Length: 73
Image (tube, rainbow, N blue to C red; front, side, top):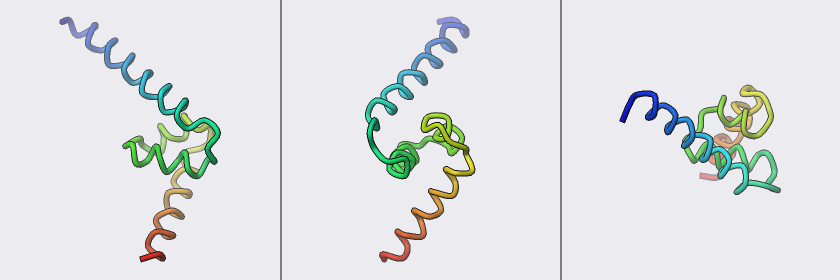
């Protein structure tokens, strides 16, 4: 397979994953969407793009989430 075909296939796969993630999370609160995408291995920048917010907001939410989990232990 040529490098160009591999690159196109990779980009198509990334798009498919994003669309699937968006469809799965439809209707969930933003905080839950951020948490799920983080668990799925998405970066804060990627999460921000998918959720429609800033990467700073994502980082703040992830930090809050870690603090809550730590307090529960």
